[in-house]
Image 1 (spheres, rainbow, N blue to C red):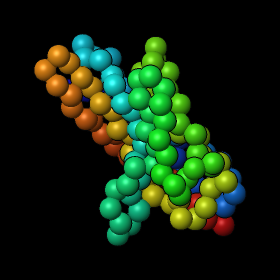
Image 2 (cartoon, rainbow, N blue to C red):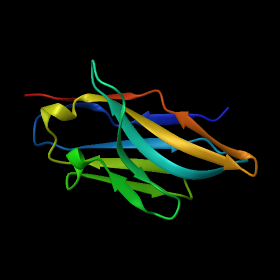
Image 3 (tube, rainbow, N blue to C red):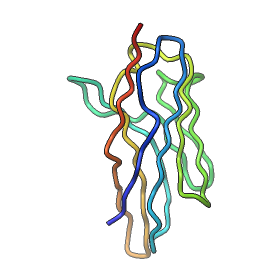
Length: 119
């Protein structure tokens, strides 16, 4: 069973920054896409940012220009640098990783880390 360990959440004032990190377990499967999702109270989980194994990135419109996703393929980690945070960024953030074999791919989720933006 693959495991994802997230870190870096917390409480920050509007305009502040946080950096989230996710470490994916070693596996016999290869890691393809990696990404971050978030879920605010009463809302559905939504994609925040994603990055392919080749480094192509995709962002939600609401975070473009403020958030940056990156990955280290050698360490199986994916990071999310969040700048200019707004109260509406408050949510539980989840790491998502796609493991693939010759037979197909499966997605795994981290346990979630709380990000609260408040003065």
